[in-house]
Image (cartoon, rainbow, N blue to C red):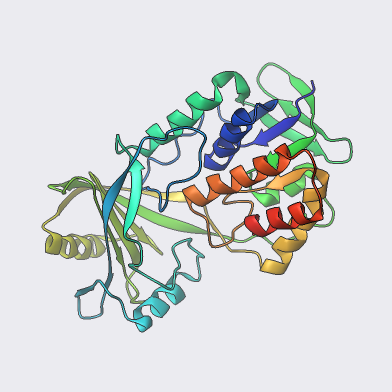
Length: 338
């Protein structure tokens, strides 16, 4: 089977790439190991920091954002001092969370779908791409970059796919093993589990997003977010009953009652970032082959946001669509991805 453009993974990066491939009228397929497109944004409070570039009306709405830092004396400071921001960044450094930021409270608005459900956002992308362009329930068995061939298998059969361009959103350590790339498959990848506790929220003002950052290293919680009927409490270790009481008391300041905690941990955790020189070396190695590594597991570049990942996918597809590609174009693409 020959498919000119192959996309690995149907997360937001893969879906973003699929949307732009459809826009450019390219021959493509999105390969996903799960039997359904993963609706992987429903486990917490998710939103867009900016409107991503997609070739259709994503039907988004702006919501009011309130950012603040919880000080040691138990007050919320909405204009955090530098020391608070530095303490917060240092606290989350061990887990390399995408929200390890030096500035808090600089955003004036964020966006969610008009339905308030990020799953609906994914559904819009899937509808635009068209289900016929997906290979669901399909595992990648191996990748041969010399012959530009992928071996995939599902319950029914194993088959070969020849490609010209490959857009991968799967974890780099897995990609390197599948591609048997000797230069990079010995890289040391580290991940750290993250604890997230969700609460049902009562009496929340519609379309109001609250983010509270906790810089105090003695506190397990490092960020609390509330949007619509969900409060997500992110912590560096499992919360105990005493921590629940602390969180509930805190949100009483906003006249918000929390109930029904539901805890889970992200099994894959957060990946500790590769240094910029290693990332640059990786992109310079693979891009001339027509292999593009994007998304949370491909870049780890401090821009690991949903909207940024989709915009990365657009840059790759725009690059692939060019009739003439030169070194300047390649340098611009790598710069955008890094």
